[in-house]
Length: 244
Image 1 (tube, one colour):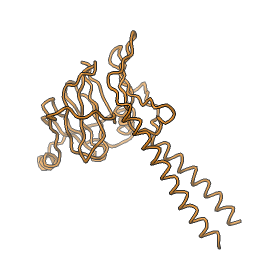
Image 2: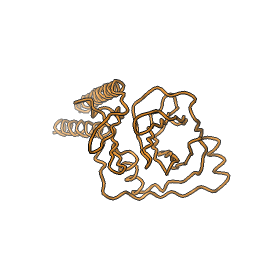
Image 3: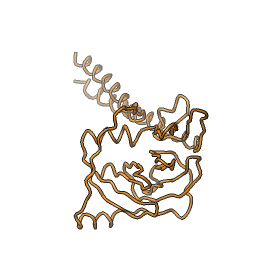
Image 4: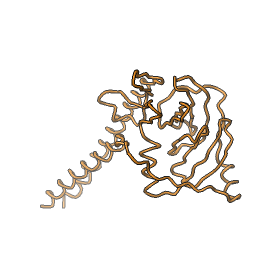
């Protein structure tokens, strides 16, 4: 009887593990009719602000960064697009392009945790998700304000349904990021294409499909390795307790 329970437990463990890993690579549907509530409170305490300025560094890049996959993005009313790229050696690039894909400028931001961006008019707001704060910069990289994020259900919904969504609509124009790697797309954590769609046309204005494909292959490798290790550990545990 004990062996039966061990086998059932082992199967349940594998199912839960498989589902959890798969959900980590697949984004949920972010289309919502109502925008979730986001509450930001400006930080005015000078001591906290001083600590923030000592630890946060955002600069204008002197060179155009190498193209990379898209972690998140946003579009303002003037059609300017901010592309947030994944961290590399602790540094992130935020690329600014026009609606036809022309490079405008880029910022560097030293942060290797979860980050998101949005436009506030012609200024850019950067969210440090794990740090629980946000700050706004102008196009000269001057910090205009620092804010605490009210971390509640509204913030969680705003993060996933607005900041991390794959689609933004400005007027009659839709901007969407895509993976487009066939059956392995679900294993790519980040998008590799930015597509602009109007009633008359659909145009790819940013494309790093080769890097996106490599990202998906890496995701598959990580998934397989983790799954195999989990099975090995589960078998060791099963054999150990099945002796009793």
